[in-house]
Length: 69
Image (tube, rainbow, N blue to C red):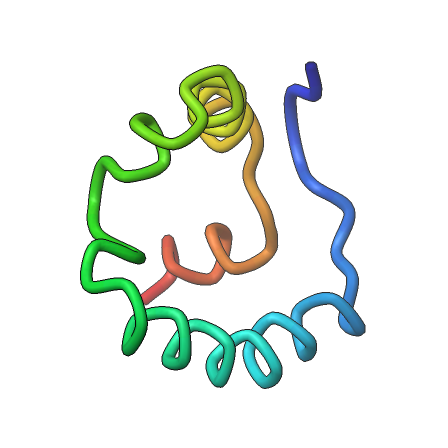
């Protein structure tokens, strides 16, 4: 498991802010429970726990910029 700063990727951050929005809106229109808090733990508990630990032990550039606001 990684501890410390995540390696920044401009390509991934742009992709996450553009194409993902349309997909999320389409899935939300079909499934009313999609995107609700706690659904990841119900759908895939092992993956949800792993992601929770990863996000608590690492930080990115966005987290650093939030500190100086």
